[in-house]
Length: 281
Image (cartoon, rainbow, N blue to C red; front, side, top):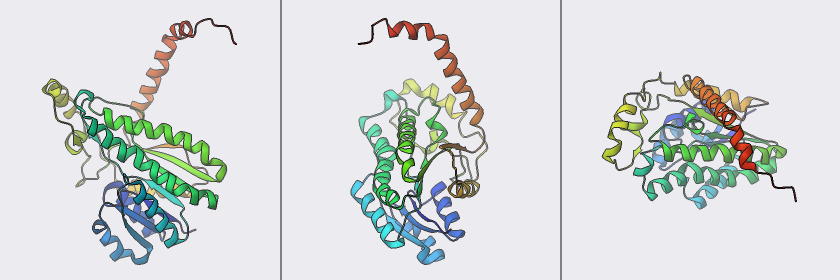
């Protein structure tokens, strides 16, 4: 069955590959970007199957208008892909209030506005699939990524709650947690080089150098392969709530969760002590 997609962050990277994969197999796509000029090649190739929409996800009114235009243009919405986002890099001490607010406005609030705009249509249809692009950074954290991790960890909790809220309406939800993908000139993106950088404090120069020697060294994933995997997800009758995209992070996440469980277990006596002995009232 032909599907209608609404995809944010369609100008490049994984978002662009998602849009192209959907269009190539005959689906229709409302593709959003800050500038529709970046979407012209899609229109030239796929014509009326793609609806280019100029939209900034931080503009709530513009998001609602774009979702409504897409629904009126295609008649329905089947797959909502919250892909727009960026990485703010910097030690927590280095981050300005504006750094943090901008990160949350795009990565968290932008995703919320899209969901709020689309859900009334999906509930009315009693069908649909929300795809939230999170990150492996949404389940583990590294130094210098505090703002980015905060936005992705917030998305993880928000979408897990959302999945329970919309299931009774026939709406599915999947959180995709990609590792590093070759979204820039065939290279694995190095967040310390390609992210939005906070004004550096020399106190963290040594840490930056050590992490810079480590990051971006994992084999880069192929965005086109990720797009094909996404097609399988949206066609699945019973898609997962969470799924990793790419190799390399599963062992790290497995170890992180094992460490957390061990720590909670090791400190269980203190946990019980903290509960106290108050009688139920």
